[in-house]
Length: 171
Image 1 (tube, rainbow, N blue to C red):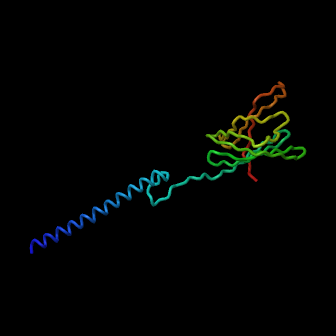
Image 2 (cartoon, rainbow, N blue to C red):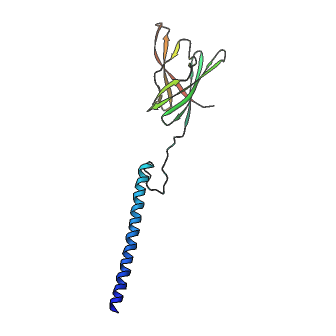
Image 3 (tube, rainbow, N blue to C red):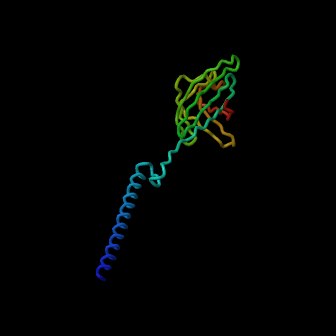
């Protein structure tokens, strides 16, 4: 009789070890699957948490410059490292408006811009360049700086000139 209870105890103990071993193996496989998911889904911390997808919200900004003959408005949307926008110029005497769209990239505070069509006039003796634009906040107010090729009426020579555009309300 004593032998039969020892055998029963050994059987129960063996069965318990088998169940524990199977459960441990199942958890190990689950962790291996989580590791696979972790590397393929953008380093999610576990399989039950979805990966975080970062979508930058667009930031809309408008800048204006009232020149001698034209009022120029630059409207842009900054989306991550991309910029989309348009430039509108209005001749002050006739109120004639011209607009051109642009696109580009942003790196630090530098904007590399490419117009989709011929940019509107900025002045009688000022021409748009392909030089980068810059956003400056040194004075406490955000300013857009654009380099133009402009004629100096005193020397009658053309030179690169920086024009500042003040932050304006977007309408």
